Amino acid sequence: MIPGITYANTLDQWLTYKPTDPLNNLAASWHSYAGQYCSGQSCWDSQIAPVAAAVPLIAGEIGESDCAATFINPLMTWLDAHNANYLGWAWATYDCSAFPSLISNYDGTPTPFGQGLHDHLLALTGSPAPIVSLSVSPNSIVSGQFATLTWSSTNATSCTGTDFAASGTSGSTAVAPTSNTIYSITCTGTEQVGCHCCGSGKDHRAARGRDDYQTCFTSNRV
Image (cartoon, rainbow, N blue to C red):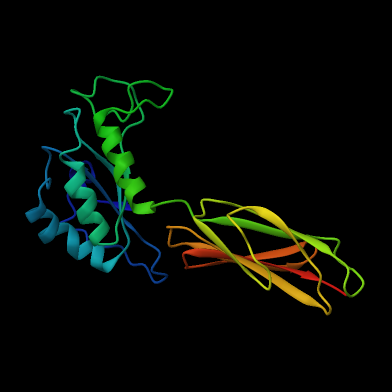
């Protein structure tokens, strides 16, 4: 990370004097506080945006000393729009009317400034992704015998089984397959990140994907 001048507040000459970097492994470091240099959108647009378009931009310190989030809210929105990264400063319990303190107590109680950062980041992540598990017992049966499928989930609003009826977001049901069968269940939530799980018996593998569901598979051998 290579900072700008004036305590990293300005990047107007950053691209002009950018170090030689054949590996393209540099990031620009920027600090932004209310009332300091380059603390308005016109400056962000003219001085910061060109840097963010050329290299990764990390605003390692953003904050305000007024016990509010009126400065960081539009700043974070601007940074999000420019695919930049940012950290609030600072994890300290000083008077937030004189210092950019994120917390008022080391138990994590936020100041209004800290609450503003928290709420913005939470809005970006959305609701937790659904998680679901599915198992069968026993794994192997004689044709026509019964086995029990059991499933459970968290952060899910509904679940649908394949080759069996899933009632609710958790439960169990008896199945009597007459041939080797793979059962699956899909649980849907509101988050846009999910995963797919597959396996046989206790051998489960997982891969990340971008969906609003999670699907798990289990097999029963006859």
